[in-house]
Length: 259
Image 1 (cartoon, rainbow, N blue to C red):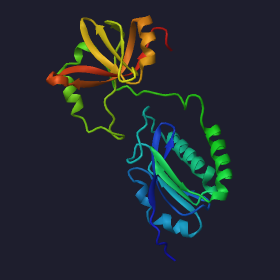
Image 2: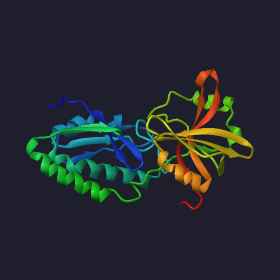
Image 3: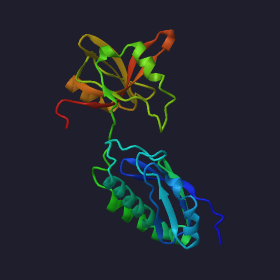
Image 4: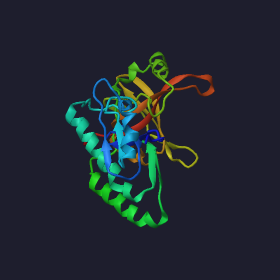
């Protein structure tokens, strides 16, 4: 008998990579089908339903670097790295699936269908898998910097060209740049309706730029104490009142002595 169920695309987060995969079948044993170069997960489109009919939960991932799976930020594409992805994906999918009727989602959201009576067992399995999978380093916030620039390089022509790389979103994030050490030009100010944002001006080798750090009012004391820092920021064009000028939308600070 031929299955009438077509494989559907899902996503799972494996380390720093969003791994996409095709899947079909219920909660039976997991069968993982891997493609080679230059193929994709669609190589297995006709086999996956047959495996599902045989009682398997059939899965075929796009290996790292093959769209729609993500790129490795460290450019590791050796066979061993792909094997590690598949092992991690197998563990994540298998850990809680016996308690679910169905599930799916992508890197930014997930959904599931579950019997009410299975919620306690699912909760226990989910927490146990998270505790076993997550380490201190995997939970540490990271910034992926696209490049380091001097303030004098950030003229309107350059920033306008960067902004033309949009539209920006999950698959095409805004350029995130960093400075070397810059000096505070004057005391930072807390602005916004509740004073929750931080406005600052920084100077480097004669160049002076203003910046805004949303939701960062608590860093004002650190800035006043150190007077010197490195910035991670998104370059923006402020066109308030018809006057265009380059500014920094600050994402993070690094002070002397920080690790």
